Length: 475
Image (cartoon, rainbow, N blue to C red):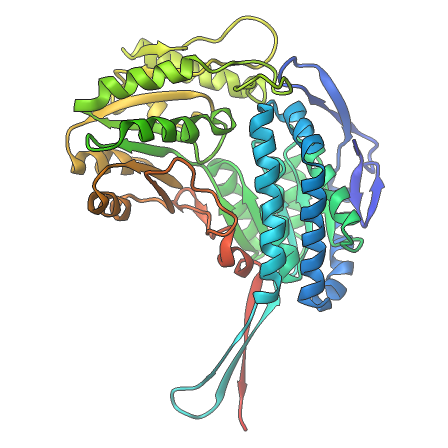
């Protein structure tokens, strides 16, 4: 495992000499110590990215794409090792980790193909006075800030389009999971990405290091995935330099089940939407709204499925649900569940934190949850499914929209017209209609309201890293 900073194509210690521990969530034990980058290291990384920028922007799109495709091949070849690394530092079950590696690698393959599709436009002005020529150019140096829950996929989802567009980057990974990001840097270097194009800066001083980079006029793009609270702070800092921003922020996904839904399919979808990544996903179903006539049946069947999941260390091949990432996360989940139970909810399965080492929380299903319960207001980020009943389509939509967030929603119904109608009325950037998984590298990923700005993935993901330049031409 590489444990130093990756700046200008070299592995270097932090200028301060400081390091920080990376823990195994299954035991709380230290698995590695990593260089702790500071503000001077952040500027060194920006220096390297700025120096490499002109040559990379001038590199033919096909060449940029081939480097990304090679990175996809390397990730695919080393999928098992990468999955073990993710499980070790993140805690997720190996099955989830292997799925993440496949998903993460696909962003490199998708944007390898998109690199040659940053085409401009040509038109005649309506007045006939001139021609309109629009070309697209890379934004410039990009600061990418990624979370711990998908340490590979959140990195590749940003690095892929940035490199395809001709930008250079400084990646600031979450301090809980820096090892996967450093592994990505090594793979990209081996794939032929030139020195300085990708720089990786682990740091415990996230606010200071990112804030210092945003004050540098050479930084022209910030892409952040994380909490809405931190996103608001970064938006304010970016505003001072009018830095282009993309934000994928918090979620509070509703999962709607109508009485005419195929309940077998709804249960399968719920298990995916809730338990993918152990519930530690911004797309995780956070609030279950079930039509009253089928609520008891759905709740019992979901609880039965959740109770059968095997909890254990993520690196154990038989584990289905690993530990949460750290003590703060498991304490928050436990607090939300205890609050709901004290307010009258019932735990159909799970509902209390186990004793012993590690940051574990059991799969939990809560019924009798009040529509205004705090657990429905916050992003749980754990394996907990609170269930609320509804009696009409209008009530279901109102409950689904009763949140400041709008990232994703899930709708299960046997009536296609209803499904499309409800999908249009729900305030979310993405909807899974009779489907528990929406993420796809070829699709635009992002939210509305307090869930973010911009889109990642799809062709839109490439455009986030390009600026349009209009040239008026006569001939």
